[in-house]
Image (tube, rainbow, N blue to C red):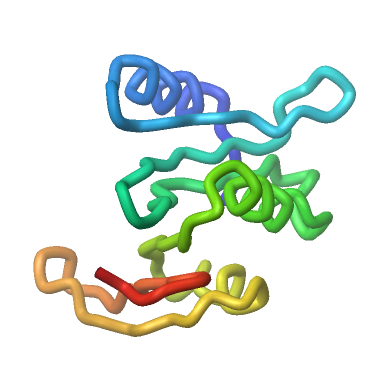
Length: 118
């Protein structure tokens, strides 16, 4: 979940070019320290990416971005993640379900907060 400048710029361009993807930055002291990429569906908000600058991790920024999405939309939130990040979602009350991604050959997790997976 580390922000890399070139990667962030590339990711931001993808979101700016899309009619359905949304992207916002978490700013502290005039610096972007976190980013959240998501998509709003009729019945849920789907998080595509949450990243926090390495020196700002473990300070509640990622959780605050999830809380901000809850406040903005009032819809269930869903994310798909890998083993390394599933604890982040569990700590915030997401219900997780493991599945095997055949294409990538790894275990992933569907994480849902405030509703059922669809």
